[in-house]
Every structure is written in structure tokens, then in C-alpha cells.
Image (spheres, rainbow, N blue to C red):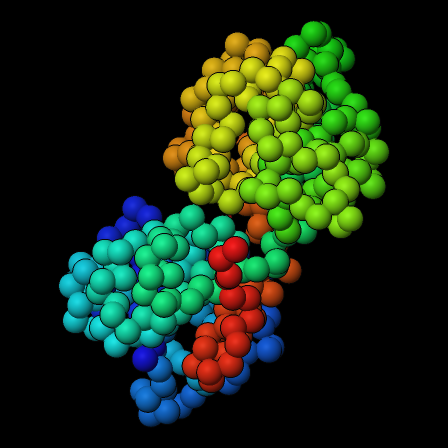
Length: 375
Ligand SMILES: O=CC(=O)O
């Protein structure tokens, strides 16, 4: 058994016998010390450890520091260290791998799973699971451990930050001052298009009231005096979640000043925010997306922003990352971040612990720490 490391996204990846698939693209920062990690086994001991197949961007993993993922209970099988194409590597080296470590950028479909017949667990560094073929995993009895709740507060903070920035034009004003325009052109222009909006009292529509959505709701209601409504797969128990529920995203948009997208990407939520929803949100409406780019029909959203059919957008995610529609780069009513809502030093440190903890639990036949369960 073992962990297999595989390259992701635009990179070719070799395949093997014991692989954990992981794309640690969001671990590429210095995150400090990891005193919690077990001391590495000796070379001889390590040879006998189960392998975890690691499918990830090798540079990201190296920069993050492999030492943070050390365990006396497993070792990584790094597909990217092989010159073989991924499928050949997997076929030759990973057939007995039972655990796979991946990230949000590592697409795992039936093709890869076919090459890993012994695979029993996928540990992903992501909260979202849209990169995994969940139905295939279920069918094959492969368990999944995600980042669970680790990022929720950070993503909620980011969503609120993006909303405030769009309404108050913080980034745009920052550019204005730094470009020397305050001195050369006078006060920041507050014409009809560039006006600043108040956050207090705004009607917030949250799409996806899970762990992240609930934290966004709490921040905006309790901290900023906003009213909150939501759309979700199912209506929540009103005793626990008192916010008004809208079954239809279009109706939610029609009753909101800002729509904040916090849902997972599924066949049901793909392009859930379409032309009609954007029209319902209207000229004074703002979109904030910390979910997945494809939850919005991006082309339509860009058109609405350019033509002033919605007021602004705060976007951490895009349909074709890292490609960002060039029209958005010009707009002062649009604030962009590079899918970095989860990236804090603290959450990355917690993530390393969780990843190692999940894999150790798996190899010790103990319950996973953050197992995903279908509902
Ligand atoms: O977007 C990031 C994640 O799903 O973890």
C-alpha cells in the first residue's frame, strides 16, 4: 500500500500501483512549523510502509514542504517523479495502492480509478468534491475524506471581504490613490456608476447554506445588520435555520441586493446563476462567488457587468481557471481574487494535520477524521 503523488491540471502525470492523488496547488506558501508530525521512519522501515499515491502539482508539494506530511504509518508514491506517462506509471506501480491524496485541481474519474483496483480511500485537500467522480467512487466502495470544515471561516471571511470591497470600491479606490489620481484629478469620482453602497441593511441571498454559507449568513446578519435568505438543495429545519428559504434561485435573486454563492458544484448547481437569475438580481445587484466558477454562466455575467445590467461582482473562482475573462480586468465594479479564499497560514497548517490524520486513521482501520457522506 502507499501514497502516490501525481501531477495535475495541465501537467502530464505518470500512473502506478499504490497512489494517493493530491494537487496541493493551494499549499504553495511557507506555513511555518509542523511540530505535530511524526518523526520519519528509517529508510529500511520506510520501505515497508504502505504507500499513498500522491497526484499533485509537484512544485506545490515541494514548496509546501513534504516534511509536513511525514508519517510513520505510510509513505508517498510520487507519480510525478517518473518519466512515464501517468497511465503507464499507474499500471506499473500503483495497482496495489489503497490510498490516494489529491487536491481540488486533480480530476479523478473512472479512467484513473480503473488503474487503481485496490483503491479504498481518497483524501482530498479540498472542501469541494466536484473534481471527483462521486458516483464511481460510491459504486466501487471508495471512501472520501475532504478538508471538512477547515476552510469554512476563511472562505466566509473572504466572501464578506469581497462584498464590502465591491460595495465600497476599496480596491478601485486603492488603485486611484496609488496611481496618484487623488492629487492629480481630485476626489474619487462618485458618479452614477462609481457610487459606493452601504452594506448595512442589505438583503443577502445565499446559494448553498452549508458550512460556509451559514458562516457568511452569521457574519452579515449579526455583524452588519443585513437580512438573509437562502436557496439550498433542501429547506433546513426552521428551528435551527430561521432564514427564509427560496426553492428557486431566480426568486431568491429577485428578493436580494447581493447573491453570495457558497454551494458545491454539481449537475444541479452548474450555471444555476444564468441569464434569468442575473436579470432578476437587477441593475443594483451584486454577485459574490466563493463556490466554483461554473455555478455562474460566466459569459452572461460578464455581459451583464459590461452592460451595467448588474452592479458589480466579487469573484474568487472562474469557469476556466486560471483564465479570467479579460473584460473583467478593466472594470472597477469587479473585484477578483485567484481562488485563494481558503489560503490562510492557519488553515494550511490544520490541513496538513488533517490529511496525515485521515491517512493514518485509514491505515489503522480507525474512523476517518473528515469522511464525506452522501446525503
Ligand atoms: O476551493 C477550494 C476547496 O474546495 O477546497
